[in-house]
Length: 283
Image 1 (cartoon, one colour):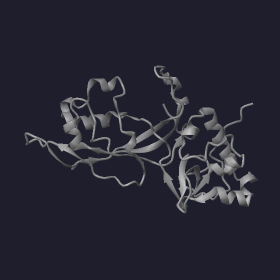
Image 2 (spheres, rainbow, N blue to C red):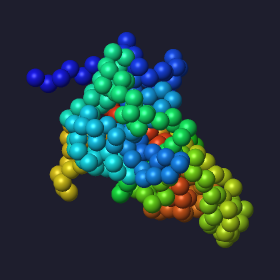
Image 3 (cartoon, rainbow, N blue to C red):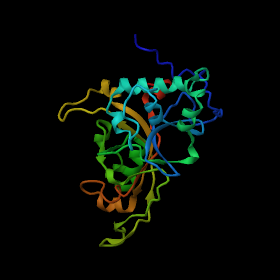
Image 4 (cartoon, rainbow, N blue to C red):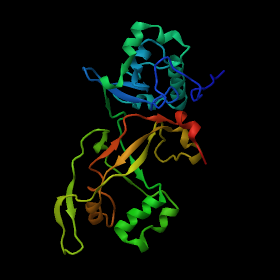
């Protein structure tokens, strides 16, 4: 019989002390990759309160339904395993952290190895990203950008109402939160000038966006039906999509974003699974 996934139960409490307004209660269980500030290799972890839980330690102790997946520098191997394993691992972690569960709580040696203050680790980019696509998902945002480039009368192109307008970005310039971003340089053209000039962007913009990580993909040429998409999405994170709007305005025609959009994209270090977000779904 399949175990009941009760990880979102709001009454769950952990033996780890968690403040009432904490970002990482026991119901969350995000996934990320951390490296000890004192030195050592990156490994996969989750967060509970003000602590990270080293999943490679739990896996080595055979407390998780995986082998040699979490002692790695990215989440890719875990994401490749598919939705059933993602759910099983999350359930196993939840049960180990529950107030009434002694397995980890009462094992002093194992607990000290696995549970570390977040302040004692460095969070790194959680996934090796081979490619990514950036979509307009907000009509208001698409309209505002359109006004910037084409004026109010032609702000929203007709196709936006029928398909997901998007572009492919530069995956090599994706960085984790707190990475310094350098102001890009490129060509811009002032309205009162006949020729462009080169220099640093004067209209550097940021956009709060949502990133979706695709865990199990599809065979080339074989589409995934929309109603099955949720089975392939591992989780979500926050994204800062940096833009040099003055450079973009000049290079945007006729193909699209280039240097103005690929100098940096910032991701939050924690990935929140779809299972964790179930209680917040709406039409």
